Every structure is written in C-alpha cells, then in structure tokens.
Length: 192
Image (tube, rainbow, N blue to C red; front, top):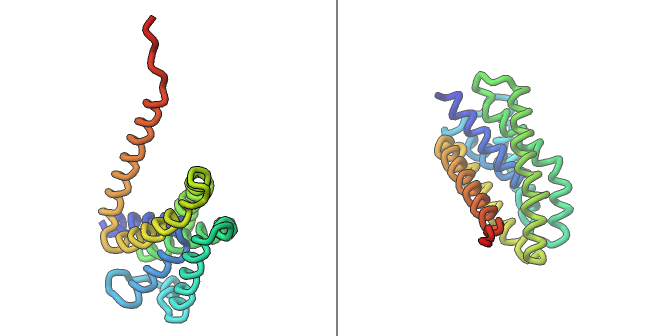
C-alpha cells in the first residue's frame, strides 16, 4: 500500500509541477523539514535545506509574479517549457525514492506527467483564454493555477488517494462537458 500511495503522491506532485515548477518542490521541502509526513532519502533531502528552501521561495515568487504580467507570461511559459518537466521529474523521483521504484522509470514518468500538464496549459488553455478574453483572463487563470498547484501538492502528500479520486472525478466531469458541447454543435436532423 505504501508503494501505491507513494506513486499517487508522485503523480500529483509532478502534475502540480506542470502548472508551477517550484510550488511542489517547496511543499515537499517544507514538509520534509518541518513535519514527519514526508521523509525524503538522500540526495533528494537537499530540497529541505534552508538555503535551498529560500531559493525555492524566491523562484516561486518570481514565477507567480511573472505569470501575471501580460507579455512576460508568454516568455515565462517558454522558459518553463524546460524547467517544469525537470521539476516534475525531480519531485517524482524524490517522492518515490524510498519505494521500490526504478529511478529511471520515476524520472520518465515525472517528465511525461509534468511536461504533459505544461504542454496542455501553454498550448491549449492559455491561448484559448487569451483569445476569448483578449488577455484579460490570463491573470485570474494564472492565480487559479497557482492555487491548484499548491492545493494539489499539499493533498498529494497528505491524502494521495483522495487526490487521485478527485482527479478522476475532474476528468470525468470534463469528459461529460466536452460530450455535451459536441452534442450541442451537431445540427438537428431536418424533417422533410
């Protein structure tokens, strides 16, 4: 059961890294340093070092602010194309390091999950928000992403199975919403 919850936790943390690279690393570092809820083995316990936590705090603040400023948010997303998957891989392998999971598999899974979330965010969600709101919606959407990344990161450590259930429920609701939109777009058959 520990392996399963560790994997659920790792998936949640790496998905969060796809939204904001530094929030899940900061959450993991803080929880490892100040609680008994998460124990990282070396060398991954370095994220709980006070100097590393300070740097992660500064980087989190920079990313949060940069993602709210028009035009800079697009530059930030371009830079984060490399940073977010790397952070996702790091947090995945760090959170599963005590489990019997091959580190190469963990790195690949973290890269794919965080990279997939980032790609969806930067190529589908954000362009749609920009196009439909003339860019005005980007700031509130960015704030919602930060809140979601924080909430999911904390939940991934405290209740990873609950996070998995909520994620499956969210996917189901989105699937139903898309089906409903497609059904509305179909022309009514004409009666002749």
